[in-house]
Length: 212
Image (cartoon, rainbow, N blue to C red; front, side, top):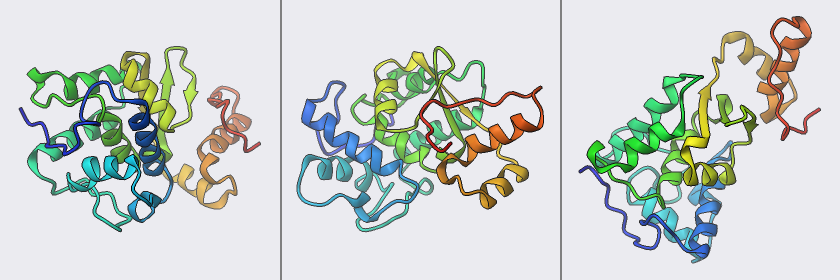
């Protein structure tokens, strides 16, 4: 079994305490920012520091004071996890890309990893950082959800209730994003832009976007 060594038994379990839950959320939200800050912008000696060190520093995904997330040339057991997550994101099977597939790969011992639920959201967030601008997470009602710590926590509870889609971000979309002033909501703005051009291709509307 290729389970990485996590030097914190408080986070390396399936059911974590409320303080660890809150600490993990701080790490997740920091990983999902558009730009990574040194040490994720976390200071002091709170439990979030221990979570960051145990899941990111000790695995080589990040290093102290760095602003980079490393997803290549990791130790074999950590690289296997990262590659499984990347493969899931890139599969892009819009009608059947349930997070339950990814969780089965990461959790079930027969699949060679056997991760605990306490650490999985951190690994997902670390990889998702590079895909976030083009990623879509949907619930069972096909409602698009904001990609934030709360969403990853909910996925962690019931993976089968959520699915992932990686949008095709072509040159036209890139140019629109570059020249627009919609910032992080540029993808949704582009959808509305396309809808105005052709009602035959309705845009997906996000209830959490407040750009307009």
